[in-house]
Picture: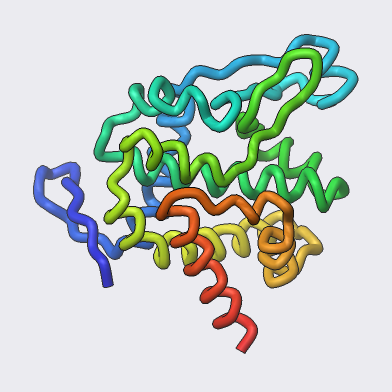
Length: 211
């Protein structure tokens, strides 16, 4: 089992299973890291008439054009976990918005995560798989580390999503949700090494669940 060495408050080294480190990062550090990146608010008309959400904000731009600037404010040692966490929340946000409009308002009320894309006279949601490809494209994450950690990340994504749906009382079967992701048009994106690696781990996880 992959392990991560982390300093404790006493200065001694703690060795955590990778999936536990991902969970700790996502709940304790990721919200702070997310607040560091530059967000752009939609104009008032878009907020009120299209999004109907006055807390909405966007990051990234087309094909995550702002990836270098966004990651420059995140400590390099946390780049990969930040990228994976960003991918996870964006995937969930877009999936619920597209396929479960009945659940989306409650998701937005509880999370209010920024949206990946850009806005002008309308709303442009970018393909979430650019969140895995753009950092690889610009050499901002270690590809080998991403490939090594991907099976544990997929397990964490499924566990965390299942937990969230259960806590919120969402009438959404996790297997159905995962298949919706796999059948969405965005899933055809296949650039680089990291995206295909995610898909391989994702397909294996689904197959294991269905046994």
